[in-house]
Amino acid sequence: MDEKRPILIQGAMLIELKHILESLENKAEMDIQGYKFWKGNMYGKLIIVSKTDIGSINATIATTIGILKFRPYAIINQGIAGACNRNVHKYDVVLGKNCTNTNCYKTRKREKGQGSNPLDWELITFTSDDEEKKEEQLCSDNHLLNIAQEACMSYDKGSVFKETLGSGDCWNKEADRLDWIYQNTGAICADMESIGTYTVANKFKVPVLGLRVISDNELLNELYNRDTSIEAQRITMEIIKKV
Image 1 (tube, helix red, strand yellow):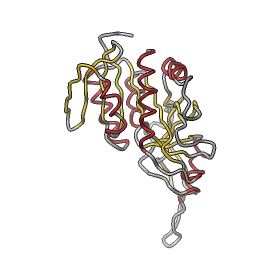
Image 2 (cartoon, rainbow, N blue to C red; image 1 turned 90 degrees about the vertical axis):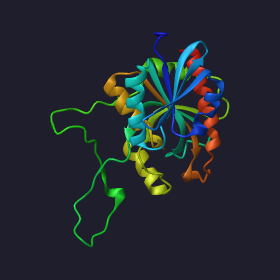
Image 3 (cartoon, rainbow, N blue to C red; image 1 turned 60 degrees about the vertical axis):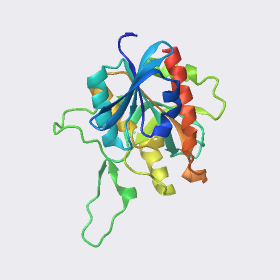
Image 4 (cartoon, one colour; image 1 turned 180 degrees about the horizontal axis):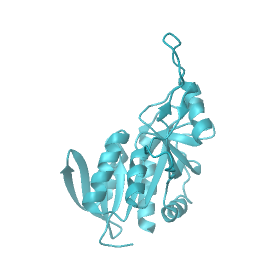
């Protein structure tokens, strides 16, 4: 690790950063184009904390600013997410081995009056007008992923999964839709920011890791509790300690 370059820690909401910010030493707050950043130290390492705000567009902008302004050694995008699988419960941890866009579609041809059927839409990735160009999978950095697994070894609030993160600008509460996401993408949870972070980090070739603690599972009627975000922050701090 280059000690002159920081680790960039992201969260969409202040509650997803509160514990980390309280633990940050020599803290200085910055506002860059309307996005909040904090610079400080943790465990002897230089840290930049970024409040991305909610949604993939905000995450994309905040990540781009973070990379160009601070040249981070690595990015950890952390917070909470809703489950898309019946085997995942509130307080479970999902370490993203990769990330997929759950809200990029091609619809079937339907005439006026034939209605709409979102369960019949085709997931598709639009990246280029070059048909020969192959889409590169948005992957986590293996080294960070291994460190995260080690950091979770003592986690006792739930299970730990190393799976696909789903991400898109939709808060899904329909059981059939959640089943569709899992069946078509393999994502066991869905958030609104990680796709933006992964896309930018992969383009700039900055090591990235996404992690989520499950805040709710509509399939099991496990109701939303954003206070689960404290666990994502504690795990993130353990990762920082071990990097």
